[in-house]
Length: 476
Image (cartoon, rainbow, N blue to C red):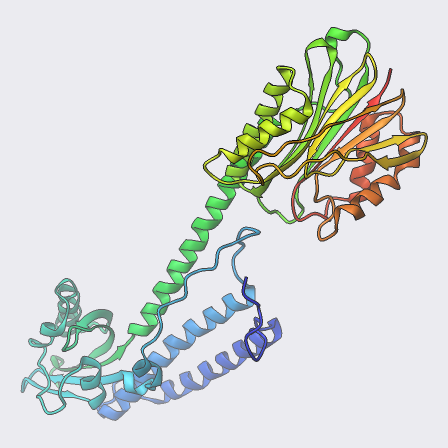
């Protein structure tokens, strides 16, 4: 990822609220000054220079109104978007000629005398329309020849309303300059009445607003893109949550083994979602009664986030359950899981720990694949079990996995967890904090109480990603 620093200076920071308020105040003071000049200019002035001045004031007030609205949006800040939104496309660049030109170079005027059929254009209007200044100005009948076919009816309607009904002109149309370049022109004008009250001429101010409209389109497209991305992210997050909830065991508290009579394990688990609102990850926990009274305990994590990862986690967990029900030992089970990930179309990495508990002998047989080892708590103290060999799932083709065995005692507590309990910290830090809970675990009456202590210790705001914790307490 590129650095947020440029080669010689930090990236620009967004303006503070105070500076934006100051800009808003300046813009509104300027609007007041421009409006005062406009009021001093007669609306029915016969002098073309005065009409030109009033028209420019009208244009300036319109743009200052837009500026006021844009600054207000800047002060309120951007609309809300997902924890890991995409960078919007940059607006089209402004041509150098347009960047270097002043506002006046993009505003021209014209007057058409209906009695003499004469036309008068300013030099700026020739520049806007790309016409040779030595050529005569176009009459009102000739002007549509520069306009795109689909915009000609709009121009005709505006001119007709002005000449027949004395309505002011205020609209836009697109013109084609020599060479095929299309520009957008905003036209404002009014009829000039003769002594008998009939329309004697028509004047207008035309402004090239091509760059402004291009920027507005880019802004609108960016906003629409952000809204689509937000909707897609929300939909994907909802689907991932629903898939995760459908796959992970819904039980809380003790899991009884109905076919073996007395309860042998007190089980509790908790999925801890990220506090940052990032998409659902591939963490899982599971406990399953197996044939013969044994119990499967497993936790794991598939790398990545989103619906695809949640779906992959469901597939992986289904494979774990199926192989365990078929009697596969933990070490061999991990080898086949590794082959499963290695054979997927989309490459993925995962970690897992799988335990098989035999209540008749209180024996725990387990294997791990690049995952934190289970923690064993006994008599008010805790330790990390010595991990057998095992690499990450999907990292190496044909990897083999060892398994270990430990004998438990009544009252022992086994804790399995995924990485990510603490953001930005190593797994060792999380393990040390879990081991520090040993005295409190020793006083707890149920596995659910222990899970509650873990949640209280690590809080709800320390994680950037998901995490899972599973507690198994030997009761007999």
